[in-house]
Length: 112
Image (tube, rainbow, N blue to C red; front, top):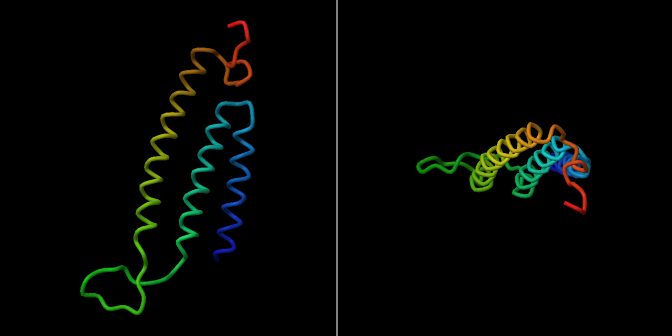
């Protein structure tokens, strides 16, 4: 299962990097979203995919699951959602102001 997760992380990083290198502003934002999802899966995979009981007092089990990676990933998901929503609003405002989402046209010229 960890090999499948590692391949999935690699594919997400590959597609995210490809989308970041395109000219469209919306594709750049989608690439950042895929990179953040790849980072979340990478954290989960590196922590180890273990089965076990939750670490609660008074509950006896043969093995326990570590809640720290799950808490870190949940925090990272919330932060990436906030950043994604901010970037989408910023891209929408840029499109409304300049009537394009092409990064080459938004860059301007050397004279400006």
